[in-house]
Image 1: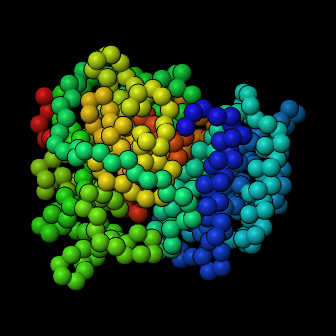
Image 2: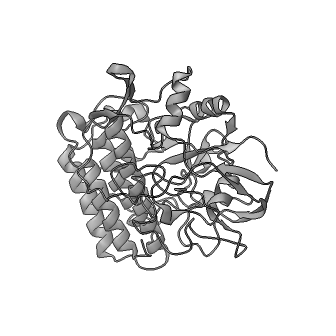
Image 3: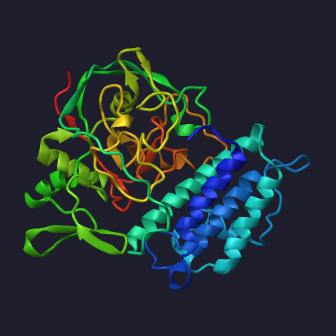
Length: 407
């Protein structure tokens, strides 16, 4: 995906979000009250509110610095501001009906596009809103899986097969610039900025842990991931949205919490990589002696490179064109990968205007890297830091392991 205009990014993000959420009507508009999902009627309105808040309602000349333009929807701040509206209250708020939420969200986008946000702050906040909507589109995908709804109506691209990616890659270690470069384009505050770290040599698996590998752990007494069940004849099945299917041995295991990933590592005599090790293995080119933008090089993503913006998982051996310079496969796309690292600020951290994005979660979340099959290419880059609490297993997350010994 090449660099596009902010308006094009907003339109692309909206198309994806609509495919994920706009059919969640009737009883599914609210759904059950669970700590890991939002009611779709609220979440759709929140996406519109966020875009309006940052793209249309920023402080204008003559207004006090804490004042904003009034929303086009009465009481919008009290309904949709995720920083001030408690999670469990979102099912009982006097929300507009589903159709009204869609109209509000769509009207906001129409107004943003009418102002053609090409430069300066307008462009920055439009790109922020597009990525925020990308994240919620992915969250709607999680919700559909969690609640057993049918898969969204999105076109699946075929997966690019490859030879088996097995064993470990030896990574040389050394001084490495962790984080985003100043000329990297839009990045989030927790990626700023690249700073030197020193890594000892280590060995990292060429591929993510598969269902077959995780099944051996389960049969040795480990807990199965969510959405697995034993089938007749001693086999196992996994639920993908509303359908049960035989366990796909070569697909990456998903719905694994950080704690479960650690338990698997203890069983396997392995460990999770640190996020610095992960980024080094994904981006370091030993021939040129420099860091790449993506594992496959500096050119933007296209469908043959990684399983992104798609509807289904691929084998861990697929997408050989996306291998890193060190020969590690699928470090972008297919499945999020837990690291051992706590989510902490980089040296010299300064929060961006959207102050609630990173800072409240430092120290109590773990870092994931790489993106999954449904992640937007706008987000899935080598320096992007996802973060969840260690108990979360509803996201499309798995793991890649390292050898215990370093050096």
